[in-house]
Amino acid sequence: MSSAALAPRKARSAKRVLPGFGLTLGYTIFYLSIIVLIPLVALLVKSFSLTWEQFWNAVASAPAVASYRLSFTMSFIAACVNAVFGLLIAWVLVRYQFPGKKVVDALVDLPFALPTAVAGIALSALYAGNGWIGQYFESLGIQMAYNPKGIAIALIFIGLPFVVRTVQPVLEDFEKELEEAATSLGASRWQIFYKVIMPHIGPALLTGFAMAFARAVGEYGSVIFIAGNIPLVSEITPLIIMAKLDQHDVPGATAVAVVMLLISFVLLLLINALQAWQRKVQGGR
Image 1 (tube, rainbow, N blue to C red):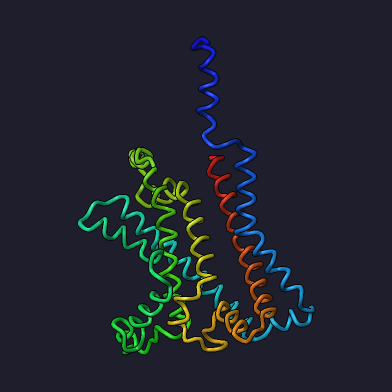
Image 2: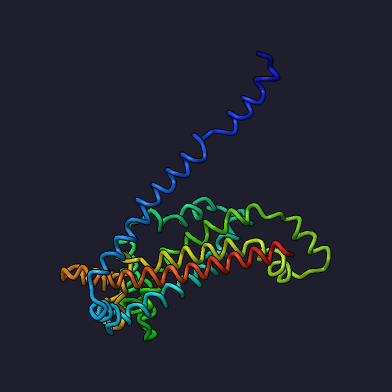
């Protein structure tokens, strides 16, 4: 057989590194169904064992409503703080060279590797009234631990890497020639950042925000050590669910979990819609 005839076969075989679209798509759907879809469906089905009145009493009780407000408010605040400082850290790591840069870069991933219980104990030791940092705030009459402030601190700690690691590669791929062109046209530093850099990294920053927010909403281990867990004050929703499970109230815990799932899904859907809109606006420029 001639080399000319073998060339198309080689080209086709080079394109098929994986065993075909149909098989890989089927495996993808099967894997996601087992890992994501089936557990969520099981959660919804379990909540159907309650009557509407029982479901409403479980999800609309005063402690549950207070925990929703606290969990989502603190998660949003923590995600906003991480969006600002995560962008700043990513900027420093990408744009500057300094001694110990690799150490700082490695420290960003520490919340990923550190067990959440260990993080909670460490943060409590630092920010308690007699802690290394908390004692200075305590002298000013500010209590940093065992209240909603402690929850925000824990959520900021565990959510920071999501923003940094999402924005950092986008900044690395950004073409500095665009900044130089804007500078030559007389743009100020703020105009360059706002009109040239931010449109490029905006979708990545929103993605990092969404991931940090979603992670914070479901956080449990690091929060319970520094929150104080006071009903109606510093009791997060995951703790409400765990308390119901300890009382063998599995349907009630499932009902609260369903509410958390629905609210989180709607918020993430809105954030993704905002990302899509921003990409569309950016592409139309």
